[in-house]
Amino acid sequence: MILVTGGAGFIGSNFVLDWLAENGEPVLNLDALTYAGNLETLETVMDDPRHVFVQGNICDRNLLDGVLEKYRPRAIVHFAAESHVDRSIHGPGEFIHTNIEGTFTLLEAARAYWNMLEGTERESFRFLHVSTDEVYGSLQMDDAPFTEENPYQPNSPYAASKAASDHLARAWFHTYGLPVVTSNCSNNYGPFQFPEKLIPLTIVNAFAGKPLPVYGDGLNVRDWLYVGDHCRALRIVLSQGRPGQTYNVGGENEKTNIDIVRTVCTLLDELWPDDAAGRRDRLITFVTDRPGHDRRYAINAKKIRQELGWRPAETFESGLRKTVQWYLAHPRWVADVQSGAYRDWLAVQYGMANDMM
Ligand code: NAD
Ligand code: TYD
Image (cartoon, rainbow, N blue to C red):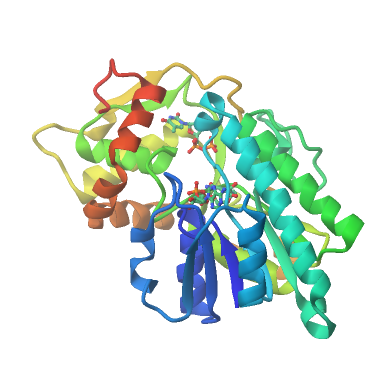
């Protein structure tokens, strides 16, 4: 079996569901179930004997040693992290704890376990460290997209903590020979994303007739990748990626934030017209910019394309349409994640003055 950390979060749960559908090998899913982890997302596999869920923290070395010894996974796919830039600005401590100390603890547990393996079990073992393009910092509009050779220049506490975890993963390969492969992916979107990130927040607010907050001038650029394409990339990197290497993963699909918000509004107007209230773009509200807001991220995915034959299957148009349709079809999931804690976050980030609540 494989061990997945953070498999109750957005990308991790999509990965677990895809993995069981496409590959079928059993998965041990270790997740602390923070605000971002949700077992409802895994409802279809909770009784599946190929899926074992353990609630636990990657900072807990005893727990990690115990599950590794008991389940003897052939690989670890490491998603568990604090992942939201705005939360990292309000409270960086958790990011340092989980993303840096947690990754360190997991690497150490993996090293001890791997050292006890022999023969082909030892040779074929892999540690896939899932990271982000934000470690490379911010691009000017005319800069070339990030390659794996770009220097690390993280600007937010989130990006700095992920950069630190990437450095640890790299060092554990170079120093101890632990067979680590790292992937650095651009912004994901798709089903089961917590509505604190731009696309799901825009969908659920637009649907509910609430303001759509756009930071600054709305012209910041992100590269967007459908989560299913990311999951497929990770399966390929896990099976064919070379230890010690890093692979950039992205849609080569750059959009400004205001473009994204307008496109979501247009899709919702088409799929769920609100004739009485009118077009959803009336809800767009420019708000104070994020401190240190990176202007542009862009990915050069040539290495994974040429070396491993991966390319995205979804276009942005098809992926975004699927995503909006998914949120419209799953009001219970949305309502359940918009619990008390979610409302507390909206108050911290957007203030009580507006009617986002
Ligand atoms: P997420 O916030 O939706 O989910 C994170 C999951 O990790 C949650 O289920 C949470 O309960 C769990 N977790 C948090 N702290 C933990 C701990 N200490 N021990 C065990 N579990 C813990 O995040 P996501 O968007 O699914 O991102 C997953 C990974 O992919 C992260 O490492 C992130 O940096 C990376 N990534 C995300 C994106 C993106 O666009 N979302 C893009 C590139 C890379
Ligand atoms: P986000 O989804 O938080 O991802 P990241 O910061 O990791 O790229 O934000 C994507 C972009 O959207 C980013 O430039 C910030 C912007 N944004 C808004 O304009 N309004 C919002 O309410 C949020 C959450 C993000």
